[in-house]
Length: 53
Image: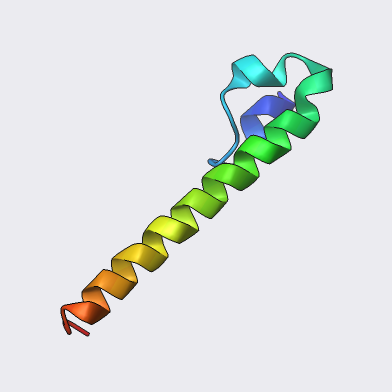
């Protein structure tokens, strides 16, 4: 049941089945989070360039 409490950013449950992949799981979640932040920042800067503040 613990798997269902995982955050939305968590990698697919297939990875969660192997306890040794916990570090890889954290890495993947971090990578996804960074990707989202980068995408958000890019969208904001392109919006600022178009001066639609």
